[in-house]
Amino acid sequence: MRLCVLTGAGMSAESGIPTFRDAQTGLWARFKPGDLASPEAYQRDPALVWGWYRWRAAKVAAAQPNAGHRILAALQAQHDVHIVTQNVDNLHERAGSKHVTHLHGEIMKSRCFVCGHYQTPDAILHDIEQLTEEQHEAPPNCQRCDGSMRPDVVWFGEALPDEAWQAAVQAVDAADEVWVIGTSNLVQPAAQLPVMALHAGKTVVEINPEPTPLTPYVHQHLAMRASEGVQQLVDQQ
Ligand code: OAD
Image (cartoon, rainbow, N blue to C red; front, side):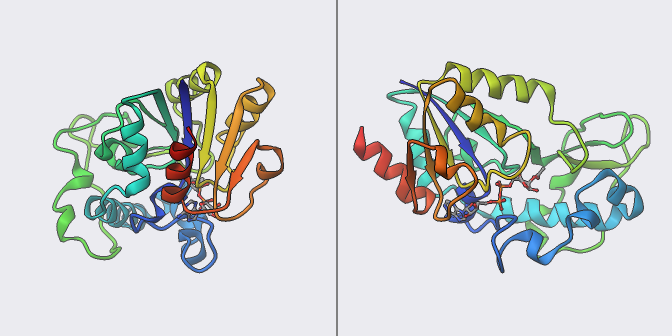
């Protein structure tokens, strides 16, 4: 079977990485996206933004893939599995998944705000294990053009990386079945992918403890945590 798995922040919740929109625990309940997640915010206060993303990268570095990530990685032994994630963490890869497309970039990488240059070793990872909370920190300068480094993530108002979007559309197109796990299905264009799958007549299964705008249209909604849901789908096969 060719399986396309679309994942969002709920996939990593069991690894201790906060989601965005969950009441109380979601990042957007504690922080304002307008202060932290746009090019304008970065230009206004680069040290605030760089320090916040470094803190989030530190949380990812300290986290471990959960049972859900591991079950999806193990599925590769039997099926052709393409994971398309809105998550900027690297937990799918660390669990062993080989075919992962990042729609919203990767928090463990940085690039120059001006010229786009990536440097090695990556500045965003510098002494990351020492960081325990968010703190203002001026971003380092680009070794090529002296511009400022920024996290390699997609911010509000920015386009998705074209290559990633094309790969995602192809993965949906090629799939026999699509699993949508741990996303509120509120952010475009990512939320279009399951809709495209439904229009193309694919079987779409959603795993999310809460209903989302997609829920009324899917073939099966498993109202449970990601790890329980993927285990149930594997047991059903
Ligand atoms: P959200 O925070 O919007 O949604 C997370 C979803 O996960 C919610 O629907 C929860 O009900 C669900 N959830 C919580 N715990 C879960 C668990 N253990 N198992 C399964 N589901 C669980 O996160 P996303 O939909 O990923 O953008 O948000 C999309 C984008 O909005 C993010 O990629 C980010 C954010 O602004 C960028 O960084 C560009």
